[in-house]
Length: 232
Image 1 (tube, rainbow, N blue to C red):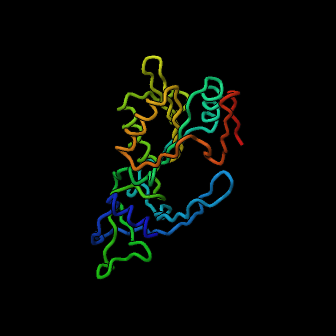
Image 2: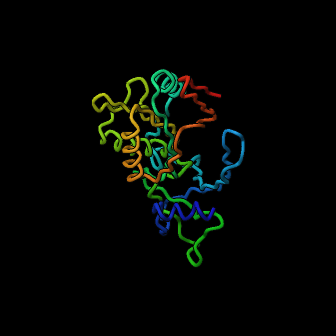
Image 3: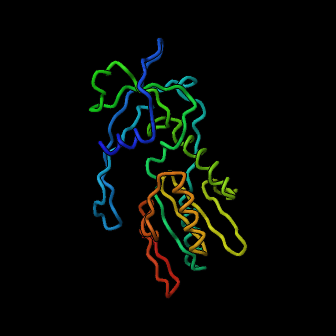
C-alpha cells in the first residue's frame, strides 16, 4: 500500500483541494492480489487503489468510455506464425501503473484514500489528474496515450486488431501486442526489439521481463532447435 501511494504521488495523480459547492466526491477502496508465475509460485504481493467508478455521473464525471484490448487469438496467431514458423524473437514487458499514464479530461473529485488521509487536511478531497483504476474512462485514456506515442514512432495499427501494431524497417519487422498492461514484442531482429524497449521505457514506467514465458494465464515454452512452441 505504501508503494502504491508512492507511485501515485510520483505520477502526480491528484491535487488536494476543497470540494466545490454542488459536487460530490466519489470513494475509493484498496484491492489486493497475489501475482504468481507459471508454476503457481507467488512472485509479488500487490496492492492498488481503485476509484469507485460505479458512482460516477454520466455527462459530468465521464463521457465516452469505449476501449479495446488485443484479442487472445491475435496473440496465439502471432506466436504460431511468426515465432514458431519463422523463428522470431518474442520478448515481454509490463507497464507499471498503466492507467496513471492517461490524462483525465473531466473534473473528478475523490475522497482521500483510507489509511492515508493527510493529517490536518482531512476536510480536503483529491482532484484527480490521472486516470485511476476503477474510473470508467481509464482504459480509454490509457489507450489514447499509448496509441498516440507508438504511432509517433512510425508504427501502423492493424486493421484486424487495433491493439496490434507493427513496423517495417527494410527486411526487418516488429510487432507489438498490448493487453491492458501486458505487452509482447515479436520481431526478427533483436536490435530493433531492444531499441523499442528503450523508447518505451523513456516514456512509460516499464518492466523488462525478457523472453516471454507467461502471459494472460498462458505458459509459453520453446524448443529453438526443433522450431516448436507450446502454449499451456
